[in-house]
Image (cartoon, rainbow, N blue to C red; front, side, top):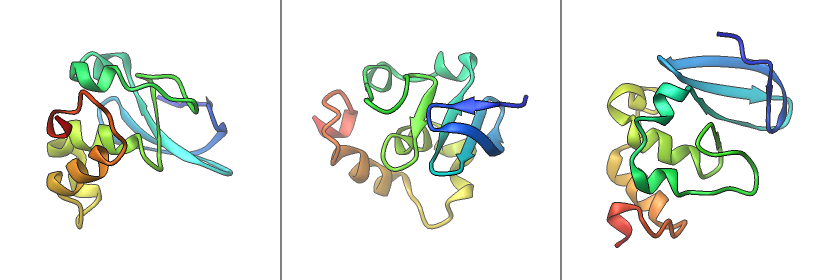
Length: 105
């Protein structure tokens, strides 16, 4: 699948981390795109996360929201970030105050 555009502009590069999970890179920004099948696998708390930068649940901005995708699909894509653990992601995600994130309660 070739993704041509993103909320951040024309796509310069993409990498499929796992089926339906793509890292998208533009001239000035990046993020993760999820296929409809992957969107359907997101837990309820993740589906409630909104954004002023991009449309959920399709696009997940690199600086903060992509951590949610990394957490949810960690077993499949975690090897792309060898120094990252689920515990580190939990702490990072919790800092954003996503009220329905399980560890934030």
